Image (cartoon, rainbow, N blue to C red):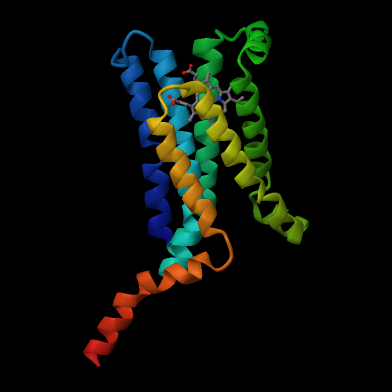
Length: 208
Ligand code: HEM
């Protein structure tokens, strides 16, 4: 299998952050409200992984290196795993596993509802990200996986609702997300390509 070592390296690196945070929680190193810190950190890491996953196709098209695509599905699944941990931390530390409290939260905090919509979208993508679904759904698979753009918008809205006034960090995530969306517009990547392949072409000419 191509890029085997690269895939294994990504697989080994991806779970390091949550494992480290769990260790910090166990060692009482996350401050007076470790549950909330875990929920927030896991949410941010899930969003970062969503953006990294979305960056794989443009990176492959700009660099021509197939390794980016080789780890795209894995990164998407890691993003989903981080979201599951984010939800688990919320269920355990914020709700105290009380389903009644969830109903109150859904009514009182609309950002929870927005997050839940994003979660359902990610769940659909995660269960259809296997070879069998790709074969079975054919061209509809690509259309279904365009859901990712709507999911990104929902997650950014979810985060904006949480951070409200403290908007600087949100702006960074939103700017990266918007940039990745602009790269999907037909023709944009083609225009950027010379900036990435230019030096290589030049150096080849020089060495001739
Ligand atoms: C049922 C689904 C979800 C629930 C119940 C949920 C719950 C929460 C809660 C309780 C917070 C912390 C609010 C606070 O600090 O006061 C939060 C923040 C956040 N969540 Fe979610 N979430 C959900 C889905 C998602 C998904 C799918 C993502 C990303 C892929 C995500 C990313 C984030 C981010 C980025 C933050 C902000 C963290 C920060 O700025 O500190 N959430 N979420």
